[in-house]
Image (tube, rainbow, N blue to C red; front, side):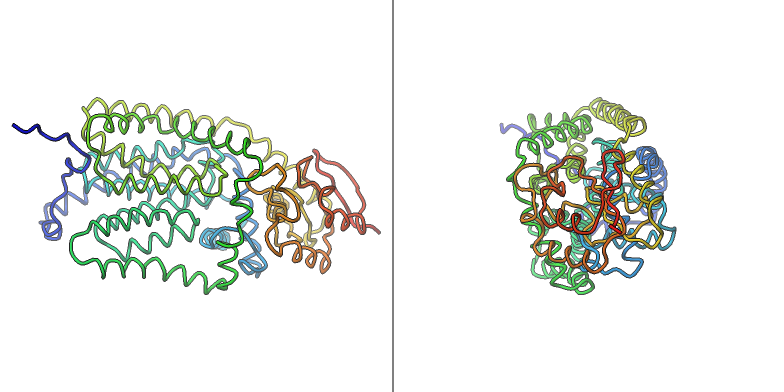
Length: 498
């Protein structure tokens, strides 16, 4: 007698055949409506609770500051990838600009609410996918587990309204649409993820796998997917200028993506953030590990999604904590599927463990001090006091939020020293200097300073490798036209020579 094969994540699916799903009776449709009406308020409340710390500070990290300054410059007539530059795609700068236009540019509270909404949408997409595969209870489990795990990193990574948080709804939607055979919608979602952050395009891997597994001809689904991916990207390139778009989002980041320089520093950061993610996902990992030991896992698309997301985290060799957010959605679905195979008490344990871990990370976000923010606030107050509203200033450092807090216009399109020296990404070794900056950046920087010299220069390097003393161009510029006037909290202020 043949032994019964071990269960798999796919073998416990409860979804009906596609023809039956298309002809759901009215009673089933009403039950579906009740399901979401009950689940939506629960997930919405949980999304707000888990992101309460995000409202505590005006800013959480320099990425938020960069986006805020970009949005102001765009609103005042700036052009993305020309007079306003960054290595990121355009979708989030445009969202910040729209939020500032609607609600004013002095607070990020609207963006905090938008980030909570993005997390809610991600949870709903994961719940929908899990419900289709494993039933009503699995949908609730996936939504709740995701929101509990979504804050399981350093608060400045998990609570900030930055790229990864807004990328995740698109990635979850791409898998959901592909799982249902909605290839055009899946392609559009992949494009949305990639236009929020380049690594969001990694979700194309599970989408293509699902397409390959789809019964029937593949030519039309593939064409729909390609059109869905390509059309929004082509539109964004056309709106911002194809050459500028390609340079700033793809080809202009070779030095930034290099592993050379500060290897031990970067490795330590990677290990620390991996450990933090493990703690935040403490309720997810044991069920996955248990199922790997006792059963065929199936669900190859989820494993491919996790592997592609892990590759995206590794890309560039920087290992910032917010990169790891991309791993959480596939981990949640894998854990949800595993819990359908395991005994019921495993679900209780997973939820309880996740809730406890979430509570610790939320408490950390509410109580942890933000010394770098305090420094930026103090410098911004000094800049505002020493300059007029129409003056242009240069903050030579890695805290672009100082411009936003001081309500002053940057003297350069390069809002941090990182773009000019490759200090971006925490590089603090030999690959920091003028020759490692973005190609052509110093030429444009010199032209900007010569055309409209800043009224005030603040050297906020504080002993780091991008200090003006190590950069001949900036050192000569300060020596020719500026006098050292004061030192505030380690930052050196220079005023134009009379």
